[in-house]
Image (cartoon, rainbow, N blue to C red; front, side, top):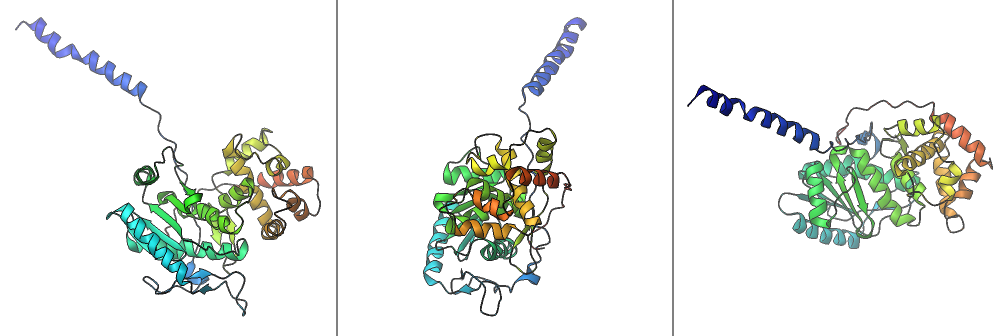
Amino acid sequence: MSRLRLLVLVVGPIPIVLGSFGLSRLLKPAAAPRAEHNHVVAAHQQALLPMLAEGRPTTGQRFESGPTPDGGLPRFLVADPLERACDREADTWQELLGPDCAVVVRPPFVVAGDLSEDQLVAWHRHTIEPAARAMAAAYFPQRPTAPVTVLLFSGEPSYEHYAKTLFADTGVSIYGYYKRGQRVLVMNIATGGGTLVHELTHALADFDCPQIPDWLNEGLASLHEQCRFRADGRGIDGLVNWRLPKLQEAIRHDRLRSLASLVGDDNFRDHDIGLNYAQARYFCMFMDSRGQLQDFFRRWRAARKSDPLAVTAVRDTFAGSDWETIDREYREWVLTLTWLVAPPTPPSE
């Protein structure tokens, strides 16, 4: 073989390989957006509420609305029909999910997923139970009357796999979602406990006030994405989270629609839904910072038939201030906030 031919055989493929590599880099799809983590911060459950016994309870438990006679937290009551319904639901989910998943029953919740049984119990004890108790005391006194299934998946691959396998759902939120008709939360729990509390808010609202307007439903749920359970167990305080920078940018560039439009037009999902979520979240947080959120919600809940969008409840909460004043004070307050990324908080802390 001549030297020239040998040189062609050795060197010739190099431009082809380099060209193919460059073309593949050019055509490679953009990386998927990274999920921001949502956390329940400083949720020291041992200091908040009496713990349920380890293991599966022998009787069902349900929420009793209102405080106990001695002024304590809402109690759990025996609810055998609900427990039986949860048992049936658990059997169904165990069959659907298969041997790679565990299922635990804590009425009114059935908690399942590709975590260990101990992990599922921990998520219930330290996140689901205290969040449900706090929301029962603060917002939703009507207890769940049917099982609520919470599906917790360990990461995005398994979350997307089971969403497609169980429900034929594709293109789902990277965090999780609530299937209202089936009372099922489907969660990528790797994104944090705040994601779980967000979707749990929707489930509990469904039993108590199913006609809640979108802005309030998503505002309250988003408020709980980054949150702290109150020491007395009677509420949840929202903390600054990753939605803040986009909201502040919109305010600074005069691209944020008015609060009157957000609350009164009932078009929450029509335009720039991410910004709508941020505006609604921080409006709920604004009211909470002034000690008004729970009073506002109770005021709306009592008059929701005549005030379906909570327009009157907002005005009454702000003592009849006009919308322009409310909006100005809200925007000024938002611009005082700072977003600092929080470290991950495991469910056992």
